[in-house]
Amino acid sequence: MPSNAVPKCGGDEVKHRLFNLVVGTSLLLCVTTLMVWGASYWWQGLVYLPVGPGRTRFGLSSECGSLTIIVNENIPEAHGLIGYWNRLPTGYYKSFYSSWPGLARFGFARTTGMADDDSAKAKPILVPFTMLLIPDWFFALIFSVIPAVWLMGALQVRRRIKSGRCPICGYDLRATPDRCPECGGGVSPANEPDAQ
Image (cartoon, rainbow, N blue to C red; front, side):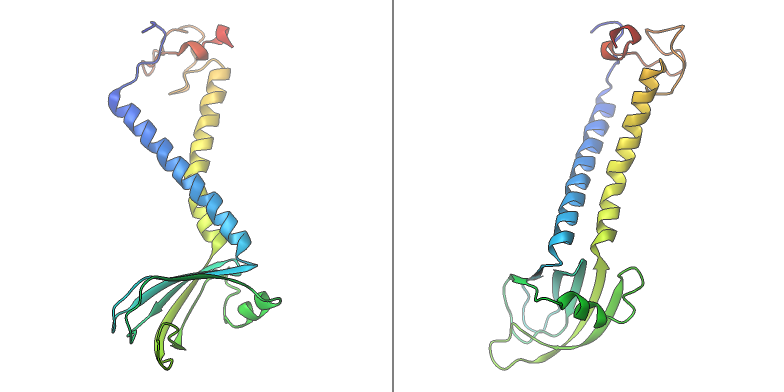
């Protein structure tokens, strides 16, 4: 190992790789959310998880820029996984938002009521439901926080290196270019001022 290389500690290496994995996963979820958000103005996706009779059924629906969490209680018949995509009719967007009172509060809404059970094989039965509407922009914002923190940290390290400071603590390394006297961190060969 060269004398000016940054020593890697086993625990720090694992933490660094784990954080990069979390950043990558969060970025992937953010991009996926943005794509679903855009598609939800033209398509509706609906998924119900499998349940037994007399149980509570959970579902997710994506439409008009929102994710809807659906909870149906006392389902009369057991069913497996239900899922489908539908093309939304023209003008659906306006009717969707007019049917949710209070949706103007940044797109969040909650409602309860009775609805037909689509999974019933015989005559449709009314079952109680609760729906919670969460806008897609909220999920995109949540998933973008960790990549934004990572990017700010990477830019800060880059600025420190370019100005001849320690990438770890920011101490001025012009007098001691091999090792930081403040934190003890070494300078990697790529980060040396004469290698740039």
